[in-house]
Image (cartoon, rainbow, N blue to C red; front, side, top):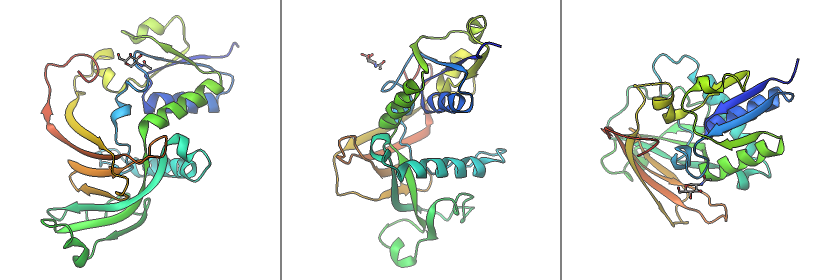
Amino acid sequence: MAAPKVAVVGAGVIGLSTALCITETCPSCSVTVLSDQFSPNTTSDVAAGMLIPHTYPGACNSKQWFKETFTFLFAISNSPEASEAGIHLVSGWQVFKNTPKEELPFWSDVVLGFRPMSEAELQKFPQHRFGQAFTTLKCDCPPYLLWLEKRLKATGVQMHTRKVADLWDLHSEYNVVVNCAGIGAHQLVGDEKLFPVRGQVLKVHAPWVKNFIRDGDGSTYIYPGIHRQLVPLQMLGGISPGFQLPPWKGMMG
Ligand SMILES: *[C@@H]1O[C@H](CO)[C@@H](O)[C@H](O)[C@H]1NC(C)=O
């Protein structure tokens, strides 16, 4: 049988990681990534990349996913590739105005050094009544996407700029099609439940900021990053899930 031809649709962090997994698991497969956008123009490029999982109701293997992701990225952060891949450990505080229902989140024993903050520490964060201190990983997405692309090219994976309008268009050319379209799935497969929300992120040069500070609801945060030239860039951000932008066209409008 000829080598199976696999198309991965989408070149964000999921598409590129999936393509890499497939080519490593099946070296004889001929893998092609098809996407209308590549880094730096993907949704992943603007993701903060902090490893703090959300709780997805009904997703019973969230912890397993998080654990595997943490182990995988931790190994990179501990390797000579860390700087180029943009992956580093970062310590800080997650603070809450009201004590959350789950004081001990499911991921507390996956991150490093998780502990509740003391009263004395909380006094440093006015208006906040509860907090958690821990060390997690941050994956700076633009360098990480380029690092993934480089690894894919080195293993012979093809990357084509192509807007796929219908997955069936790939039917005659490929044996397997993997949908990693992300937000693009709204149009590609008519996933009406998927829509972008408005967010604002500022990147500022503040190399003295070494720790993350995050509001427990995830709406505001300060995340320290690393630059490819090793000039730290901090991210300050906020999103409001209520700010949907209908009608929207294309990726992030
Ligand atoms: C990203 O978008 C800009 C503006 O449309 C374009 O000039 C550039 O070639 C794009 N980069 C890639 C890698 O596709």
